[in-house]
Length: 441
Image 1 (cartoon, rainbow, N blue to C red):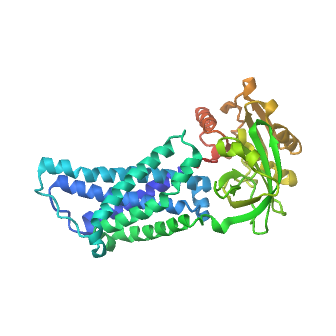
Image 2: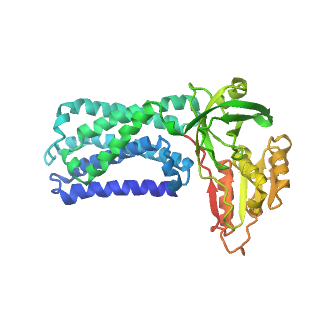
Image 3: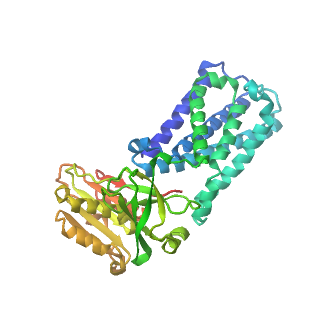
């Protein structure tokens, strides 16, 4: 909801600024209405597209100050994704509207066609190259969008291709500045676009210099490795004194290999004073499948973070339900570790753990052990191998509690949709649902 609201508000402000400049503060556009409509639609889609691209450049820097307003870095990435999709769609619309000038000329001739708007004098001689660069960039953006939506395309190859985006933005920023009407820069649209473009250009420079998250990076070494069942690798690291510490349930971007880059993993351990943190990494792709053979004790590691707002709420008296699916159990492991160290803080909660095969699961025993020392945490393990699948009716929510229950979910998106639909059917729309949107493309 916050993602849609943020994007909708962003586009609404841009649209109002454009409308004010085009129809209120300046003389009404002259010419035949089909030509005027084509010209103004061209400008509006151009404003939308370049502004959205500037936004995604900023979001790519992982700005920690946006976590609280948006609900966590996972939501920042979701906003980045949808802003990127809309930027490409509006950019493609901008290009198609420009091409529509040909059919309009064939049908109507040039009578009533508005005169070309003046652009900034500095770029008057660059119109041709600016147009060509804009067209080529749209082709590249459409290809990138197709690769992003094509889930079978390898993630590591997609990440490499994605690294050209800052350079593409700089090309499109030049296109926008060179071709935008000069009057825009003294109007409301310019007051919005100028700082947006400046922010986008600066963000693109930071990204191209490889300094995303630079101020939140810590270094350390791998201190222990353990291969567990079901393709899980436990990695324990000791970080240097520059590690700022984390809250149970947060995640970090971890770089084991500079050529590969950083990948996000939930920190599966409670905060410790000695800088030791633990990750539980499941083999879900080519890269994570290679890690057990690639990592060595003593190997250096770089950790950026922490990020995320999936943090235990012990101050809320409302009933709590925790639902974990597969490797989504990791934030709850960190929660339980923190509560075992301080049992007095443990809330009354029901933990549902959904697994394919409980007998072979690497975490079931650890969950039972921790919950045995925390009487207020009730554990239910749902074993798919035995036909057990959690249903909304099994999520025990006390309707007389006086407060809307909280459900904390981390796991497969399909399971989340099923549970939420079930809760709505049961008339429990008042449930406060917290979920990690852990999807980076």
